[in-house]
Length: 302
Ligand SMILES: [Cu+2]
Image (cartoon, rainbow, N blue to C red; front, top):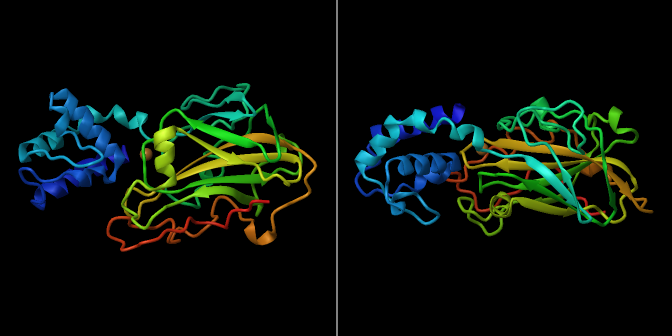
């Protein structure tokens, strides 16, 4: 709902600032992909030609078109639930592991994923939901050999600016007692920005947007044992308004490795960085940045 308010507010600002006139480029609306979807929906409802929709290039709507958008915010309310996204299944060694589909946790569901209650954005890095998006346990675990890939799948994903980060946590025991607490999380994979244009689609999350999946290799010398694997998308499409989307699954790493990450690469979640970290609190449009460093420790490759 916060997004709906933000859209109305944004359009109001556009109109009141008289920044939108006939033929003006509306690419700014794409700053929030949610807005893009809403514009699409409304345009559909009014039989705009498809050329009137904001696209990856650019397009324009007339002043009256914008007013029409502003007058119809309720039309798009159902789109809110469909926005955002979460990991919904995994593939490991050719085997698919169904995850959770969202919004109605099922007691005892036979899955490896920790059931998250919703995929609303988490807005602060210190939120307790940061650990596993509120998921606390799962009855199953997937076996994965050290050195093998784990692929996470998203049924849907909406944003194209911000990093992908993949983390592990050593349970040091049974999953039922594995709460993700303490300074024991480490990164095994990340993809932030390539190139130097923050206001672009050259981001890890843009790959998830396109492919709806992400593969990461479990470090090949990792010490065997029970681990949580945590996939995190950090959406940066709204200036200085980060959105975190993390989900966890339980994996049993096998092999004969002995390696563990050094202490300087371990951190706790929530709060693996300060909210003011430049990788979290960033304005990709007006911030003047030409590079980006994902928050948290460096990736440990084993
Ligand atoms: Cu979203």
